[in-house]
Length: 354
Image (cartoon, rainbow, N blue to C red; front, side, top):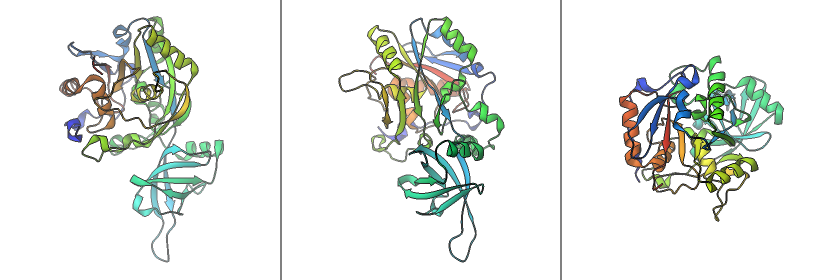
């Protein structure tokens, strides 16, 4: 398929710069095969599910992963250069992969200084502007420094329009976030409140957890015309034996499994071995789900509305079919749903052939 198959025009004023208050007051578009699209609110989610359904959430916690640094001048002329760092993926206790801007001003062996208190030595430069940084602190000490000097890594389409502020530290984090390590938030989960979680429990809907640490690569544009030529960045996941057993039991009993967010979906679809058995444990996944993919676990998806030409939009097209994808996005734009990370939500059921 061509990248142009996933393009659409979005009015600028539909890009949400702040979330709904309360979180579960966001709108919810419901799409089922061979049924008209329904408009609701997230708080009403339990009525669209049934007892025995399994919701799988990503419990990753987002780091303050955007750092401002200074690179010392090179040679007798010029001065220090400001460099923005976007942490991408933890390598070990003292090293991270990151994206830097302006990338052309950073070279191997450069030292980037953050607030005169933390140094990052550039020890590797990869493709697409990715660098590997070795920090002057490690472990918990490094994590504390990142939390102190960093800011929440809002997506570029928000950060270009307003500054990150203290409210984002709360807004850009799910209420159930636990395992620290993401540099972007799994935003479908932002709609859930303690009251909504309690209502799901009361309705007999199971809740289980996976962890996938979202990398900054989630914001990278697709730059190839043929989507099969795109290369995904790997992300680290962890699935407990309890979650794997619960999902296996649900599938064996014919109950539905619904992923809360594309990160949960990608994790679930990554833990099926060649014999069709659902496994547990940890690893890295670079799974790229596009139309034609045969889903092994997931029956439905709760997700926000995604950017044109994005890998997330391709995933949605794979789940519900291309005709339904275009119908959903036309409806969302005509009905003035709010888009992207702080926007509204959708509940999408898998097409029969997916």
